[in-house]
Structures are given as C-alpha cells and as structure tokens.
Image 1 (spheres, rainbow, N blue to C red):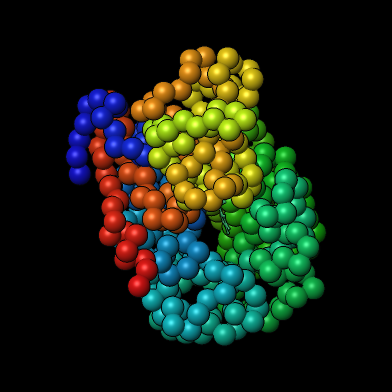
Image 2 (cartoon, rainbow, N blue to C red; image 1 turned 90 degrees about the horizontal axis):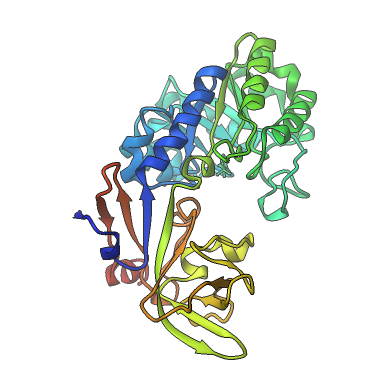
Length: 381
Ligand SMILES: *Cc1c(COP(=O)(O)O)cnc(C)c1O
C-alpha cells in the first residue's frame, strides 16, 4: 500500500473512495437500524471494497452473499453475520457455505429439500429461509426487475410448498431497485397478501435490497415507520434489510485521463478507462454518469463524446460539455462510481483494471490496490 498526499498523483484510471462520505452513509443507516429495530446487511454484490469494511463494520450487522465466494469474503473480511442466498446452490459448494453462513436462503422448495438436512448437520445453528416472489414490483426496468415476467428469482405463491415450514425460519424477498420506501410499501402489501399467513411461525423476514436509503430525497421516516408497524403487527419479528447500492451511494469517483482527442463530425475524447469494462451499467442499465464540472451536450461551450480505450465501437460514456476545451492529459472525473463498478469490472480487450484508493478523513490517500498484466493473464489460460 502506498500513501500519497496530492490527488494529482493518483494513478490513472483510479477509483477513489471518500471515507468521510462512506461514514455519512453509515450515519443514515445507523439511524434506520436504531429507530426501526431492523438489522442491516451489506450486499456484497453491489459493493465489496473490502479494505473499507473497517468503516462499515461498526454499523452494519454483516453481509449478504450470493454464493460461496462472496460468503467467504464476508466471513474472512467482514465477520459478523453471513447470509447466503443463491438462485441455485451446487452440491460442491453447500458444505463450505453452510459452515460459514448464519442464514442460508434457498430460491425454491426443491433446493430447500435438497440441502436443508446437510446444512443443519454441518451447522446446527444455521437458520434456513426461502426467497419468495411477491409478484409485484415498481422496478423501472425489466433488467433489474426480479418480479418481472418469467422471473426465476424467488418462489411464487403457486409454487410454495408448505412442507418446508418444518425447517424454514424465515422468508426473503428482493423486489426493489434504486427505489423509495413508497415502493417498499407496495411490495410489502403484496408480500403479506400472499405469504402473511406463514409469518407468525417464522423468526425473521428479509426485505432484500434496492432500498435507496442514502439518497438525499429518500423517505427514511417512512421506511422506519413501515418496519416499526410490521414488527408491531408480527410480534417483534426480526427484520433484515440488505442494501448494496445505498452503502456505496455517492461515496467516490472514477478518475480517468484524456489520452487523445479525435474529430469525426464532433469532438471525441478517448480516455484511459472504459464504459464497457469499468462502468458497465452505463451501457447495460443504461444510465449516464455525472462528470465533474460538465454539462449535457451543448450546455457549456465545448462538447465532447467521451469514449473508452477498447476496440468496441459502443464503448461510449456519453456526450458532455465543458467550459474549457479538453486537452490530452486532463483528468475526467466520473461521479458516484463506487457501487456496481469494481465488482463488475473486467479486463476486456486487455485494458488494465483501475487502481483502488481510499481518501482518509485527514485528506491523505491510500492506494490500496494496483492491477497489472498478471490480473489479465491469470484469468485466462
Ligand atoms: C442485488 C441484491 C441486493 C442489493 O441490491 P441493491 O440494489 O444494491 O441495494 C440485495 N439482495 C439481493 C437478493 C440482491 O439480488
């Protein structure tokens, strides 16, 4: 690890987490925990910068993992509770997962029956649950809608098998994506309509992720009320939330550098990062990242298309305008790039992964990871 004191000496490209901003998010989540009585887990799928776990661990109750590798990371680097859910577990993974998990959540009664006995044998204190599909969602896009048509995620009411209830201690749903507590209210109503009769026999309900709790206009009070009311109605049953995005929301940026500028009908800047390899949701969602000190095309005097350093024609972040012309060597700073970026990044086209750095409360910067050729070579053979 290297420490630097001047942000101009950051390697490029580089993800830079702002520790102070992560602490602010923890304050909000801490308030939700204490006023609602819910437990909150970090969803590693969205945010797994494990060298920042020291900042998160005092507030959150553990992690939710989507399989063996995330469960191991949770166990090794976070500690506290490990909750593991997978759309389908494999025979070869289930023993190790059961050993290190506190909660094990199955996607179907079929998987529940297949693995419940062995999980309990290996870890008698493990708590088993089932993910259900409330078949209701206000998700803005089908790609991120676990309750959409033909969804494989979670058991529908029609497929529910009451014989699991002998060993099942909790139900899990995940139906939100970057949504407010009003969307949770709708999901909860449908969840209760379909599965409410089982709740009195259970120990916990997991409300999943997608709660955009740390966004400035999120209605935190409504979330707290919904949880309080739910707990009051069901004999103080344990509630879990498992946000990923809300943990890393607005906590840092991706710093990139202009390598070249070309003209073909418009000005195009080629950067040393990539939408496809480093910020895939800009293409998949799709969404437009904010770039520091920029406007939409034409808003400021100098407009550029920002493109990545791969040979994919569509490796484009978007069109942005600036007050001054971009020059080779200039920094371009993509805001809010801590969640769903480093967990998804690839070495496509052999381009290096961005370095990872953490800006400490005193302003100093720890370069916690730099990637090179080996990372590219080692994932191929
Ligand atoms: C993706 C996911 C989460 C986290 O979702 P965010 O939108 O990042 O909050 C939590 N639980 C499950 C089951 C998920 O699939």
